Amino acid sequence: MMLSFDNLIQQLFYRWGSIAYRFRFILFIGPILLTIALSFGFLFIKKQTTIDPEYVFSPKNAQWRYEKKVLSDYWPLNEQEFWPGKSYDYTGYVDIIAAGIKHPKFGRPNMLVLKYLDELERINQHIIHNITISVTHNDITYEVGFTDLCMSYDWKCFMNEHVTMLMPKERWGNFDSKLAEFTDDIINNEVKITYPIGWRGTEPIYFGALIGAPHIIDKEGHFNYVRAVRLTYNVRDEKVGNISYLWRKKVAGFLSDVKNPASNILEFGMYHNESLPEGLQQVADSLSPKFAITCFVLFSLCGLSAIVFKPTIALAGKTDSTTCHPFMSVIESLFCPLLAIISAFGLILWMENIILYNYKGIGVDDMFIMSAAWHRTNVEQSVSHRLSESLAEAAVAISITTITDMLTFGIGCLTTLPSVQMFCFYTFMGIAFTYLYQLTFFTAVMAFSGKRESDGLHAITLKPVISQELADNLFKKLFLTGSVSLKSKIPPEIVQENVTKNEKVVENVKTTLSQKMRKKFMDFKQSLNKVKVSVRIDDRFIQMSTQEREKVHKLTMTHFVVSMT
Image 1 (cartoon, rainbow, N blue to C red):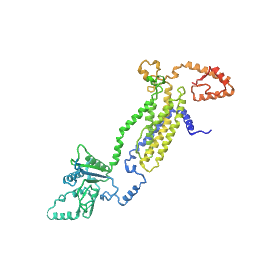
Image 2: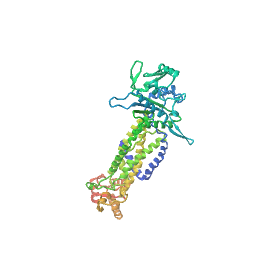
Image 3: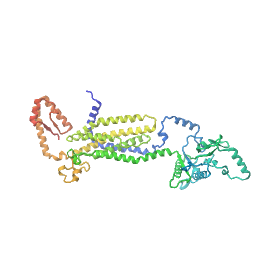
Image 4: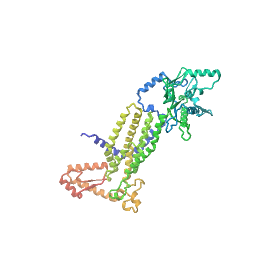
């Protein structure tokens, strides 16, 4: 006999339901212990965390990576022989764009005006000499500044001398007598302030990267207006990278201080090598409040889905405290995904993979499917049978969605873009663990919750509920009433009496039916014994002839009840 895929999955899940009910304690404890073991992978989280946008958002085989390597090989960075613009692989830098405060009518002022250049030079000198980091070594505290951290050439730092070159020539130095004549001759003949390339003797200076929006007045490139001026600070990043990072952060804080602005006539824009990753981190941090709201709405919806109204008194707003399953909903919507995420992240970190993304709530939709399947089962059946039927009904839905999602994200793992690759890999593992824990941990929770419901216990207090007739006030009617267990309603002696009577009915049926139909009946009875349920058997379950059916009806007063206890 050929079985379709959905029938095969349903049969497997049906059998798994009875196994899961039998070993529910192991399936409940096992995922928790596995999660604890895998969570030790978080010990490596700091070492394997990256905020490098070049690595994350650029393909591994991008052409620029090869080109950058060629440039770095031919023009390597030497922090003690550094020349601005001659290297392509330095990371410790701060770029500042300074411009005069914009006038509402006339726009940006001319930065070549002396008061703006003087103010810019004051800011430059303050950054160079006054912004320091305290470093303690051998119980001695040192103040480390730019001149201690800068990349240099012949032990000389580059201190933005172009600001002085933009000033009037008489401000370049104060010399007397013959030395003044000599310096004037050098200034007039050897120094050229032109755009885009100026000259200081034989040294070219690329003003195209130092000034913004100049107004050119002749063919040689002289200019009389500049909208903005750039300041650059290059610091070492090899042996003193941590101190350089703190210094750059302090410079950023100095220029971005709103309460105590660095200047009253200048505005600053700044970019350093941490600007992009820190900006991305700020965007992620700004989403945290929205993420909390989303989780609250999600968990509230899951909690509301656990409330069950009695059909007969639904209009009165009475809930059934027995058939409600709030713990099951909370565990599936909060605890089960949390276990899956910890397990997935821990395993990947054990594998020494880089962590980038965080997510929450994967697989919560399966909770609604499994809960709905549970509520559609017959409450008169055993917990094991109800659990098997619930899993069999939800099998195709949760399996197909899980397999397709895992296949989709598995294909995404093959991309060369690390950001997409990491996202797909972490999501793939998260979905896999969620599916595993749904079939183990959450199934065990369903078994415990079903056992509680079968025993007629309250969904929260875990104490026996009271019937609607015994509720003498509104509070009890709203919160303490529920479906009372049949075991608590029927005295044991009556149950035993009914069992004895039903056994006699079965014996009468065995002696009355034909041999063929008697075999069918006994096979059906044995199947009931296997699942241990209480069901009603009539002509809908046993195909028999009209005469044989009449004999059964006469013996059992139209129908008979087989009670398995």
